[in-house]
Image (cartoon, rainbow, N blue to C red; front, side, top):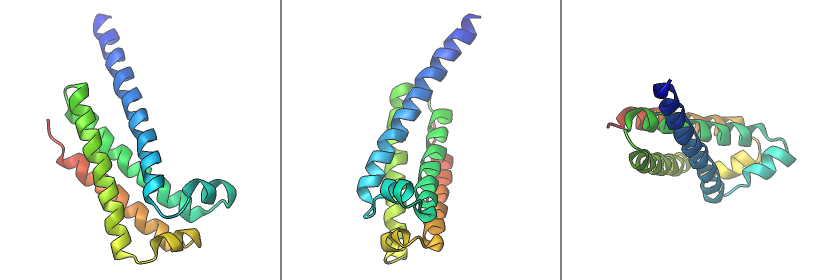
Length: 134
C-alpha cells in the first residue's frame, strides 16, 4: 500500500503540473497568434480555429507526456515542459512562414489552414517527445 500511495502522490504532482503547463501554453499560444481563438471558437463557432488550437494543444500535450515519461524529478519535468512549450511556438512560427496569411485564413474558417497548423503541431509534439531523454 505505501508504494501505491507514493505513486498516487507522484501522479497527482505530475498531473497538476501538466494541467498547469497546458493552461500556461494556452495563454501564451493565444497571445502569439494574430487571431483571437476563443472569440472564433466560442462566438463564431469556427471549425478552423478549433482544429488549429486543438491540434496545437494536443501536440503540446504529447510532448508533455514524453517529458513526464522520461524525467525522474519535478524540476527536470519543468525544464522539459518549457522546452516543449518553446518547440510548439517555433513550430507555429514555421507553419506561418510556410503558409502566408495563416491567421487570416483561420479567421476566414479555411479548413486547410487549420489542418496544416494541427499537423505541424502534432508532428512537433511527437518529435520533441521522442527526442527527450532522461
